[in-house]
Amino acid sequence: MVIGDRYELDDLPLGQGGMGAVYAGHDRHLDRRVAVKFLRLPGGGPDQELERRFLREARILARLEHAGAPVLYDFGTHEQRLYQVMQFIEGVTVADVVSEYGPLPVPWAAAIAAQACAVLSAAHALSICHRDLKPTNLMLCPDGSVKVLDFGLALLRDGDLTTFTRIGQILGTPAYMAPEQIQHGVAEPRSDLYSLGCVLHEMLTGEQLFTGPTDYVVFEKQVKERPPAIPGLPPGLGELLAQVLEKKPDDRPADADELYERLDPFAVNLPVLPGFLTLAPSPGRMYARMAGRALTP
Image (cartoon, rainbow, N blue to C red; front, side, top):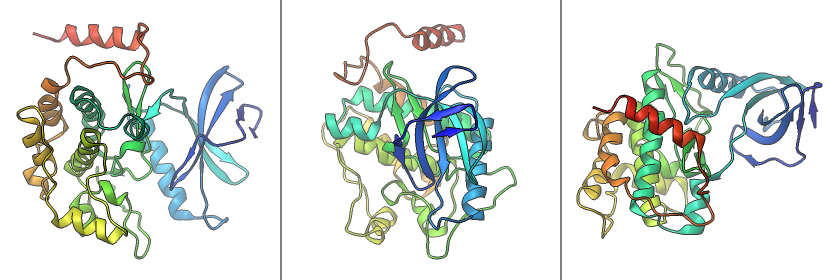
């Protein structure tokens, strides 16, 4: 597929989600790899709600300038379908890592969650709530860095509180939704922390926190059931995870910054993850190391 005379796409998508399909492509004008996301239209015709949500995602990505989020390059329409052109990201999803590796070493689980916190901190400072954090939306890159993907359900909380819903539908992924999203359809920054807590629990155990034969069963567990304790965790990590997974937002850590600082002591002496990481020098790591030293007392 070719979009105009600029973007040449692979025949098969890299992946598909609720909002659309993502293809690897080549930007002929600038000679670089890109990822192109097309809006999916389930009914085959125009869908104003999905189009507004897709446009909102593009505006959010354009606003969120952070190394842990993909860069938006372009936005347009091809054959009456909206598309986004984004930075192509090498790596594997955290879902794939857990599926192949099983429970992750504590330092890696903490490091991945802490990096996600850094992105959430930047997003929340811009009044952006992700609302759909899950292992498939976290990409582990070969240098060990993490990218937060798919802002298709993200909400701007700066006075534009329009929500997108369909009759009888709760937007989000049941296994990672905060109780307040399920019960009241509302999300706040600490809702993202709860979702990240579900991901952290899954990284530490290799299994989803709450499962069931139907979405309704999972919803019930998210709202009412206490998470089981994980044996063998370092002192303090189990207590932190339990707090992140509290049912009431006010009982969770105050914000992503606090959660980052409390995860930081556990993200040390990271072992090699065979098959997922490269040991070659990383310019990104080099830059981040010096930037961190510049402001360290």
